[in-house]
Length: 141
Image 1 (spheres, rainbow, N blue to C red):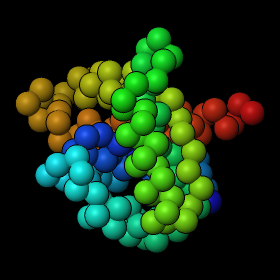
Image 2: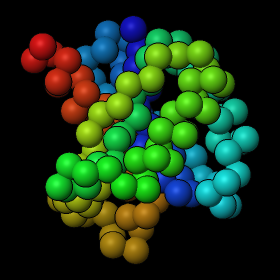
Image 3: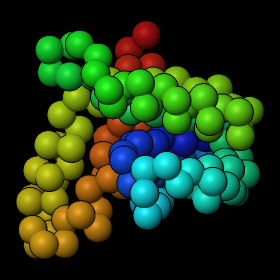
């Protein structure tokens, strides 16, 4: 069973997917849109990826604040999740994404990605981390 991981942002969605055995997560791409409200092409691309990878479940990063409280980003993420579920018909689960962007920047620093190029990768790496965190959590249960 493959799982799709999504890191939802105001103008981007980082995408990752598990291998066919559900053992590893790999970054796939970053879906970019010109403005926060332009969701049609984003949702169409997610649908294509769900079909291409035969995805059975979608994990979306849940952007709670470090304190654990929920802010405006949580509401926007919930709205996005509803749109994705309606479009794909797949089960949606949320995964706490606190500090995933920080971790993504640390990874890029370790592998030597230039600071001016990091925006090209950060959302895809964050989606991979979100998906890996979800997989590790499931293995513990």
